[in-house]
Amino acid sequence: MPQISERGVNMPASPIRRLVPYAEAAKKRGVTVYHLNIGQPDIETPEHAIEELKNMDKKVLEYSHSAGYESYRRGLAEYYKSVDIDITHEDMLVTTGGSEAIMFTFLSCLNEGDEVIVPEPFYTNYNGFAQATGVKVVPITSGIKDGFALPPIEDFEEKISEKTKAIMICNPNNPTGYLYSKEELLALQKIVLKHDLYLFADEVYREFAYDGHEHFSVMQLKDIEDRVVMMDSVSKRYSECGVRIGAMVSRNKEIIGTALKFAQARLSPPGLGQIVAEASLKTPKSYFDRVYNEYIERRDLVIDQLNKIEGVYTPKPKGAFYTVVSMPVDDADKFCQWLLEEFEYEKQTVMLAPATGFYATPGLGKNEARLAYVLNKESLEKAVKVLEEAFKVYPGRTV
Image (cartoon, rainbow, N blue to C red; front, side, top):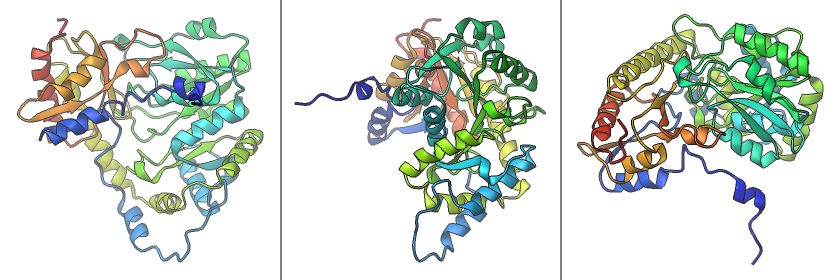
């Protein structure tokens, strides 16, 4: 019998979704499962988007341009200008989610065997995109004690080799919620220029920067415009994960032109998704104010309650809607599976994402998990209570 490809064998399973069968089994037993493992907000999608979908009068659901509908790209360019990113509709491709934007970026800028330096913990699917494109992720470890701030530039210098072609960040960060400052980005700018590298930035959580902090985009950096690629998505901004619409943005015409060839090979991004995303550009500021305040309240509730539990620590995120939690357990992967398979409190349990899958360095994240505070405050309060009770009886407790 023919063998499965080596690429397929080496493709990592998602730590975010790997435990889904155990969650499904728990639900069949009548247990309520609080899904804090995945960034699927319960925030309502903007009314403009839903109404556009309901009232659509198209008779044919046609292909769009491979780069995306021009009307949407023009509207998206105006949105970027409103956040001080001066680009045109020709500086972007509409993609099938932010995921395809990352894939196109790797395929367009990096050769097989090239290395991209990424601060860890990082969004776990970067590993998958790298494996699929033959790129090697080189991690630089950030620490929970300083809130997962950007590691020292000296650490980057130590990792740079002749194979290094890019540095990649997620800002605000998934899974940590850390928001990189303008000063940290300026430090990256210097090293990118010094070593002739690309700078890639996943900025899908741009709207979620808290406590008076402002998001500073890599697209606002000077002197490296032709080295910068930004990946974006409507999934979190408008709570539209299911429409699968993202964007790849760069002022480097050669990069966009190259990516367009990959885009042509897949024909076009989702047409219905683009219609929804374009309508979402009309979303009023009041929507974002309401969502912003809701996430602040959820964050404060979760962080405060978690840090009251003996042996638990999590820093206060400056952005996004995730936090990495240090737990008094021997093995986070075992603990997260145990929560679903063997534990319940008042017919409830919690699904978390073990943090080992967010690190590339073996052995790291063994007592950590990512928690997404994407549910309403009542559910979050119950979920934290479930965790508190679980830590009391988990057989592998370490504190």
